[in-house]
Amino acid sequence: MNLSIFLRAFWAASHHAQATPPAAAHPRTVTQFTNGWRFLQSDAPRAEAPDYSDASWAAVTIPRDWSIAGPVKEEAPSLAGGGFFPTGVGWYRKAFHHAPIEGRKTYIAFDGVMANSAVYLNGHFLGHHPYGYTSFFYGLTPHLIRAVARNDEKVVATESLKTAGKPARIQFSADDAGAPPTPDWNDVRYVTATLVDAAGTRISGSATLIHFAVTGPGRITAVDNGDMMDHEAFQGRDRKLYDGNAVAILRATESSGRIIVTATSSGLTTASFKPNTGDVKPPAFGRRF
Image (cartoon, rainbow, N blue to C red; front, side, top):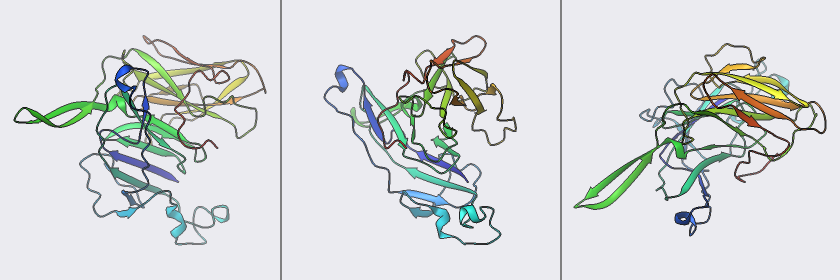
């Protein structure tokens, strides 16, 4: 089952305060996004575009399981293991607004999406998560531009979106980064390499080739980039970025030891990630499975 989620907004979901004076008076806030979604049980070209009309889509709340409504058919691709329920591509869309707070970062977090989800914000590809039983998050702050509306010199509205500069380095993020992987066959870490500028803003239009490598008691079992039109094999160590991102799936080969994952590309600063030391720690959103 493939699932795409579009978010039409400028700021969203929840805030993680920075250690700066302007944000000190505002603790981290979390907004639940269970209501106000639209759903389509099929693929829809350009559904990630901000100007796409979803007025005819079903109004739904989450969490939900769209396949449970059926129809149940013996010839369904899911077969007995999937209860003969329907599978395929589904789209969820949500429009919202949230005023920015200076010195704050904005994230959107998902407890879990089954499965192979792709997430967009205002047409920008945020990332691909290929597993349905782990939580994940994306930073929204880099995608903001600021616009100010005035009435008789009084500010009446503002909006923000930040654009990217020249490519500078590769940046890592990971799910469950604070926990070391184990040799269990189903215990893996999804490590995302993102091309960013000097300020850490993702460069969404890049297709730069990234080489992943691992040292220590671990191995990369697959690589991906979330591009549904990319027919490259998942096995390997090299992957072109899609909209600025590529993913390596990491598995431990021993129960202890120092694992280091690196991502390199010509002319860019190499990124490294040490999952057994928790160098990359996501905000404490949602549950961990």
